[in-house]
Length: 264
Image 1 (cartoon, helix red, strand yellow):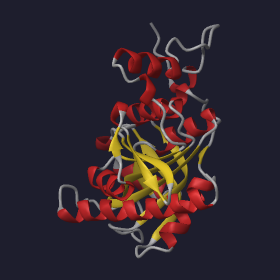
Image 2 (image 1 turned 90 degrees about the vertical axis):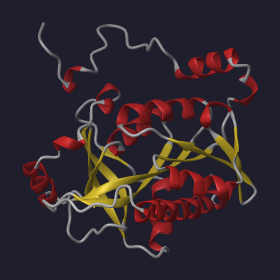
Image 3 (image 1 turned 90 degrees about the horizontal axis):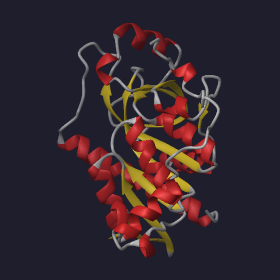
Image 4 (image 1 turned 30 degrees about the vertical axis):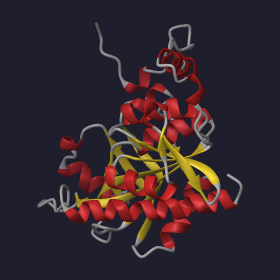
């Protein structure tokens, strides 16, 4: 049997209605667990892949656990929630689908990125406004002609908050890949020359999901490693990494406050 490629994955073979509807699925699981009255989440959701970021946001919100791993609290008198995302495009998009099914409409995501440019240093922040699509998940939502971009109020609020912070911030395109151990040197050099800022695993899929579902999603990424450097300097597993992730939470909270003030 011939293998399909990402360019074939949108072929529904005559019926494009999904078997699993996220709204129905969330409702069914909640009912089975006796939590149907607690499925809704606030319209404003903060989320992150890093425990240090999640805990710092949860503390600021005074967030309490609710169903499905989401914690709900308040920011400036408005309801807001915090959720932990699993790393990688498939898992993060699945979790975001369920958050959207539960009522999320504006989502701020804190993540991590490896720098492709010497001027972008460990500890800086990157706000992606576009993403190179080298993950598989987004192709189940939109064809290869779709450009993964983020320019809405969530992205703008993150940019403004980051610029008012203490760390350098960079905006532009990132490279999203499913295979971090296949970030080969030839691609790194080529994509750096194309002015991609960094490499990570989720942005292009998240941006594509947002476009398809009609929600506003913005991302901010802390720089954790230097992919442009053959020695691959990195801070994974260090106190510096945890501190940077906690600092990222403060930028996300500042952006959330701007969105609340604007009526998000």
